[in-house]
Image (cartoon, rainbow, N blue to C red; front, top):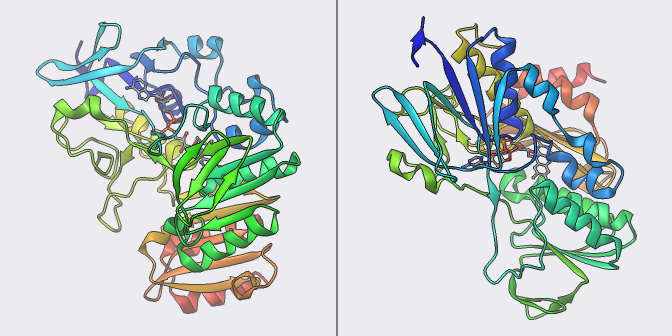
Length: 406
Ligand SMILES: Cc1cc2nc3c(=O)[nH]c(=O)nc-3n(C[C@H](O)[C@H](O)[C@H](O)COP(=O)(O)OP(=O)(O)OC[C@H]3O[C@@H](n4cnc5c(N)ncnc54)[C@H](O)[C@@H]3O)c2cc1C
């Protein structure tokens, strides 16, 4: 074990999801010829999660369609996979890193990539009959349960909750959606655009109730904080992801905001350890803070940066955060960092003024600077705003740019 020319001989990737697999693939693509091991808590080979609340849940796609890789392809990449094994401890120092698995096995490596994602947050008193939606097994269980149901209660009007609600309405179910905040997705989109998201859900046919929480789950549904109750054949709880990093506590890292990383994914204070994906809090080179993105594209982009850095290859071009969600027949897309904004700029459509939602594009401004753009059913236009965003265009430049789009 050791390193030659700074390139490690054995890279160990912990977490066999999207970012873990993309790291492995990226290493080989960048010319890395050393040993690669992939440890994954799930029994499954890496699979894609977005379809779990969309095509797979709807029954439009079968299981094999969401696989990200097959056994043969993994063999061809020369990857030793340890599936169905969770990492339970990481020790760093001296001769490299040591990873302990839940079967007592110890693996040694001279570079470790943490790609462990997040788990679902649970509500107090949540019964085991309430569904969660993070793994393929959970999506399959919900898919089966919805087949025999006529009503669904969705707790949490986040992106996943809204997608599940829309899919269930398409199947003809009565759907109630509960949201603790004043509007759906308000933490990400802000109040005005969140209100637009609320309209999308209500117009789609769901009974959306905001500003309420579940006070008790019952055999037939749930009792709510406003004194009302909801009955439903099935319940889904979609109240966000949470970090599951207790096993890294002995590293001494402050993990409250995710695994703290520099701008390239190197974990702070742990030489030879990197982190990618939902659990990683990379330093934003422009803002200096450490946001964590639970986005498919960020997981992929970060894997490209880390795999190339480990292999000693040139870094890929910088990217802008991007997220999409398919709801109620519309693609909602978000580029940039709306969390930095203190104002909005209506760019296309009049959804913000109560008009048609489809085609609405809204900019987020921090002072005069464009920091994010969101679009509802406006895919072609949204793509065009990557450049002004990357350039940090100001209000006047953005409006001028908008006018060139017609
Ligand atoms: C239902 C659903 C729908 C989504 N839809 C969208 C969408 O429309 N658009 C979008 O941009 N994003 C979407 N996402 C988010 C996107 O899928 C994630 O951002 C992406 O999967 C993150 O990749 P990751 O590798 O960080 O984590 P994951 O893909 O979650 O993989 C992490 C893996 O690590 C494993 N693991 C955890 N701890 C350990 C351990 N100690 N030892 C070993 N293995 C461990 C886990 O079991 C898991 O398999 C969706 C997510 C879900 C759940």
